Image 1: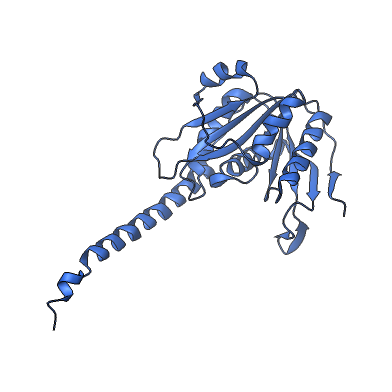
Image 2: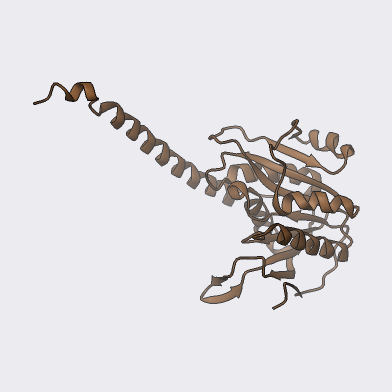
Length: 258
């Protein structure tokens, strides 16, 4: 196959759509969010493009025993409550810097095909510790977008995220701005250690406001409960290890044995 191939799976009519990107990243926040949109709006969703690239890992995905070459997928979503969407999902990001640029350019080309002018990339910001309150941090391509997003709860912090935004989520802003797209990145705080459905929900609640859609969260909350159980077990193991280390005899104790 060529370095990059795009399969036109279907042609659909969408009205002033926004591109919503949810590829794998910290805490799988963006992936969980994008997949939840597609799950909730399944009847209004159609696969329109599949993007194949040698920049993806050399593997196939398996569903019901059927193999499919790994790819990124764009879905057209007819949103009954607000703006239509092109939702970008996939199991992988590119493996090289050049690959990130090539794939992002392809995604922007597809957005152009469907007269998209606005982009929201979704992701996570690692805190390095377990958290209770999930803030959503924003970055935009134009200062005029700051105040409207602040009004729906997005926080803009100086020099955060530290090191900038890497991968497709960042390049959609950088390359998108150079091509005239109005782009924003919505990043949910997350520990960075585990898949984080709660952070994904925080991001989606913001996206609901800016795009105009209504989602139910029962399935995402169930996943969050499962992760809470995992976290509880990890914390219990850590406490046991700490207790055992406190009970171990010290060198001074060992001198008086025998």
